[in-house]
Length: 73
Image (cartoon, rainbow, N blue to C red):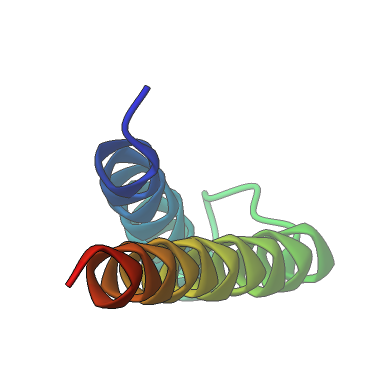
């Protein structure tokens, strides 16, 4: 399993979650919308943390590959 491609999918999923929550938050001004801003804030924080975690996975995988190449050289 390639950790970079897995992390890329994680980045995509976190981005989609954040975008969906942002759209729901934007609709909060509509009196007919039943939007809980606390839930949306937690969702956005969670998506942001998932995004950061996947970035860390990509950086770590890149560092590991570079170390391996340095060993083999």
